[in-house]
Image (cartoon, rainbow, N blue to C red):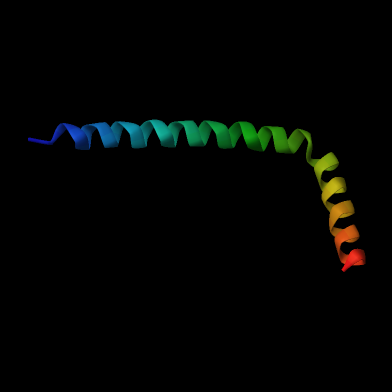
Length: 53
């Protein structure tokens, strides 16, 4: 007999995994569409940080 709390934790774990995968896929799609803007912003910030020391 499996204790009910183990079933609850297993269900929560599965739900969290599914939500995490879904969020990751959406995040990747969003990053791909906004990649150029973010890369340009990151390059600008990193170069400014290096110049400012």
